[in-house]
Image (tube, rainbow, N blue to C red; front, side, top):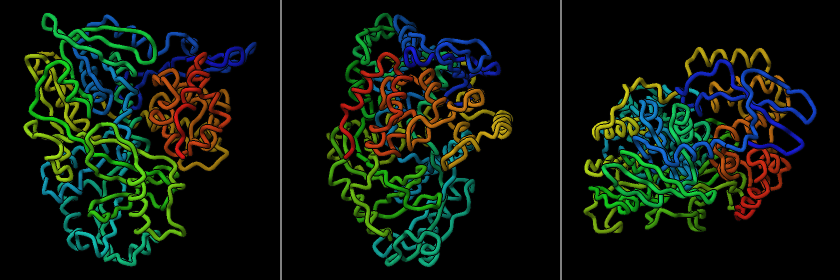
Length: 594
């Protein structure tokens, strides 16, 4: 991490109480930003000080470890499947390499609805076993991540054209609650009058009634949740790099030899591994073809979009509606914004974008179902999320056109090729990620890799005692009262949720220098101290990585405000040092959302 030459020199000090990476909050390799102005004394000095403008960045160090390295497992793909694979395997003692040709979580895993749910809508297809499994996975994640994953009500208004009467939907909600082990609040059947009183934004002119059932959602964004697994894997020894493309992989003397290209530089690398895990999401089939692996399953694509708009309801709940095609869509809270979606459209390629027709359809559907002062228009859209769901079908089908994608199950499949030592992960959901990780560990064990016992420390948040100590310290220094603008949540809660143990050192930095507790970008809830830590620990290669995936700034702040912000240049200088101008030019070359 570099800083502005001649103006600001940075130092990082390790917190004396740092632990090992067992929490999932971007790891516990705790590092503290300490800044000095030219000619002055350090503002804070504890622990072992390391210059943050060391030219050997986190990514460069990992590239050096990968190049010429010998690993037990090479994981190709840094979405949710690859991330949990890296976390569980490295946590159980394996030598793990993880690569992605783009940024981590930069494809399907950044385009979800941010929901952690048991699949209520899958009851329509009577997939009871899948719903049971997803509900158990949801419950497990809620227990493991109590600050990151919050239970939320799903408030479904049912109109005359909907497929179900409120009483029947209420039976479904009760069954869903029971299938989930009664671990969420009791569902309710709602009259139209109840809905009008509790959610006046809903247009109840044609509403017969509704239901409220409960699932959960990510307080931050999906991509950051995915990265937390990768960060924790690195904390316990995994070597990982983004923007590193696998160009070839060949079997030599019973091992894989992989050739790699650095897409952010001009460097070629090679490594060898005993096992390859193909976690390339929508690209698994092409990757398998490249090295001659045949599978019983393949991927088909369903495109889904979301529109981010100003906050629609002040209540912290998800609004649910059936659209004109009788498919559920939602209004999901995201801080000061609401996220409308999703859609379900068959496409023939993994690459997708929001079309004018997509946008018009969603806006028309939501405008018909809300009682707004003025209807939402494209000019109200702050950001758009678009991606494909990699859905699993049997390989025997002749083409995607033979598949009714709306009826396809969202369950995952894991296949093992024992002759080539390849594990392929098809499909998958954020909700089921812990099960996917454990199934991958079982698969590589079956291939002969000896793993340490699973102690369950590769995921989850720090212990309650650690959490209590942080909030006690934050309260004593009156952290939350330092904010001069209204926040949607106390600063202490936000820092703890995002950083876990590393948040202790942020308190040290803020206490020593109040400017470290100031927002670095206008209208974005992101502190200067967070940026210094991100530059050191989060492998940010360009501004989009930071704005879209390590944070959600790009989702909640309009493009025009980001691009005109006085703080954007400082962001680039802290993140990229001498390459700041280059990275700013790259960012401005990307067309803004109009």
